[in-house]
Structures are given as C-alpha cells and as structure tokens.
Image (cartoon, rainbow, N blue to C red; front, side, top):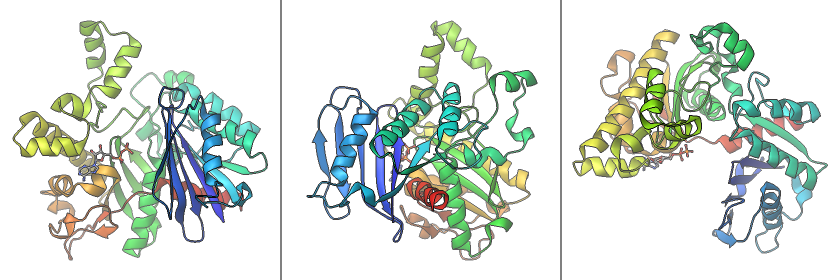
Length: 397
Ligand code: ADP
C-alpha cells in the first residue's frame, strides 16, 4: 500500500511516496521556486540517482502535475499507475483550535482550513492550494490533513493563555499553539519503543533543533507545553528567528529603525537569531567552524542557543516533576555532537550523563547516555513524512 505525502510551502513542494509495508520511501523529491524564475524539480527514486528538471512552474497545481508525471514515468518506475496511490497525506501548518488531530479532508474541513489562514498567512494558503490541486487531479483518492499544531492541543490553559486581556484570546484567537507537533509526536513514540516502556508512563523532553527549533514537554504521550507560541517565532533563538524577546524591544526597534509591521516581521523572522548574532550564517555548521577558528560572535551564538535549550529543559523537568528521557532530533539535534555535549553538561542533577564516545553519532537512532544514566539521552532522526503517512493510513483504511 502506497501513500503520497505532500508538504507545500509558499514557493516549494516536498513529496514522498511511502510504501507502508516497508515504511520506506520509494520516491521522494522537491520542487523549488514555484511561481518564481528558475523553477526546478529534483526527483529521486529508491533505485536511481537524483534527476534535476528545470522548467517553468507557475503554481502548485503545475508543480503537483509535474511530480505525478515523474512518479509514473517509465524510466523511474516509482509507480506503474497513479491508482497505486492509496491516499494522500498533507502537512498543514496551522489547525488553530479546530483540529486536535489529523482529519480526512472534506468540504467542512476545507472551510475550517480557510478560516485558519489568518493565523498562518504564509503557510496555510500553499497547503490549501496543494489539497485543491490533488482534488482536481486525483478526485477519487482520499486526502488527509496532518497539522503541525494538533499535537500541542493537549496543553492546558495556563500553558497556552498569554498575559493579555482575555478577550484578545476570544476575539483574535491569540494563544500559544506550538509547532513541529508531528516531529515531537513521532520521536516521543519512537522513544517509548527504544526504552521498551509504555508511552503513557513516560515524562519526555523532546528537543527539535534545526533551522527552526522547538522543545516540547511530553507527559504520557501528550504535549503539556512547548517553546513555540502563537507563531513559530517564539521560544529558542533559531537560525534566523529571534526567539522570545522582551516584547518592548519590538516597538523600540520599530521606532528606531522606522520599520512598518511587515518590515518588522521580516526582520524578526529572517535577520535575527544565530545569523544576526554571529553576522556569519544561519547554518550551525558554518557557525561551529567560525567559532573553532576563534570568532567570538560565532561562539556567542552557540552559547546563546545552548543556554536557551538548557533553560527549557530545566523548566520542563520542573513542570513534569522529572524527566525519563531527553530526545534530540532534527538537523542540529541529530548531527551536532558538540551542541548535544554543551547542552547536557552539568545536568547530572537530572540524571543526565552523556557518554562522549557514543555521542559522536550523527543521524542514527541511539541512546548516547552512559550505561547507568538515570535519564537516557536519545538521538532520534525525525520522520515527519512517515508520521503523516501513518496517520493518513489509519484514517483512510
Ligand atoms: P529545518 O528547520 O529547515 O527543517 P533541519 O532540521 O534540516 O532544518 O536543520 C538544518 C540545520 O541543521 C542546518 O541549518 C544546520 O545548521 C544543522 N546541521 C545539519 N548538519 C549539521 C552538522 N553536521 N553539524 C551541525 N549542524 C548541522
């Protein structure tokens, strides 16, 4: 049984066809620069190397058309026929308070998705465009929406309500939503398997550290708090995003730099974070290299990031009354031993003792803590596409 997983961004589209018997992708790829000059599709199959196709792609419908064409192209042999696709799973960024789990897409879901556009103006419209394009091209095939926010809908009001007049929550839906939910859910489920313990009895702290980063406190398989908030700008300092700030800084900078709302939004999302502090790059590999070569601001960016992560680990351990395992995932979490080492330093009071030899691992599913460490430290490569496919299969079977 094969599931097509789609992740439509504003100018990009990532896709995978996953064989649910093996749980492995049989084909995956990426369309970039949709509706821009220089559109390109990079298509891969399990057996062949990547194929790069440069052609004009005006919108998401054309992008999906092109992807479907490649999937059944005889030279790649990913699929014999589109009928082999059992169902389609879409990553949808924002489900607001309307969706606490994945859903089969019907007319009422489409209406609710459109109502969430206000909360994620950059992300939800391309997600919706992808769904509409699939409805047109594969009308008989069931489609499922899997939300980044859904996993965090289990947070309690004292975690998600901000210190603002309550009617702003009622009028404008301003509250903490949290993101990366599909990733946090996936790694927490894998952690239970690795620890050979029921998820229902575990207190986990999941650190999704990539370009965008968030941390979640997960008790009994349910998210009870997370570092991202109303938008994915909150919480940790990230590659280019500021993370949490004193809110007064926003109006202060707007005044000093004469920024309007859009300029300020752009500034906070793309010019801050590790890029802004280091002045070098948003990529942690570049920053680590510069720090090794003695660049103080690069080292400062790494120190801030590590400090931020530590703060959340401490806060969430306090909130849950302890922690049974710490999880590292995503680009930095999976691949940066030095960052894991810096974060876990002096955490013995929580039972966290890293085994520095085991910690050299990159991108493998493994416990990197010392053998008698009270709190295992798990590196778990995230797999949001598989999680989306699993939810899709469960709902459509
Ligand atoms: P996104 O949030 O875009 O999904 P990823 O989870 O793919 O991001 O993480 C990308 C980041 O992971 C890169 O910016 C890079 O800083 C970091 N990264 C990847 N590999 C390494 C590595 N070997 N060492 C340090 N950082 C790495």
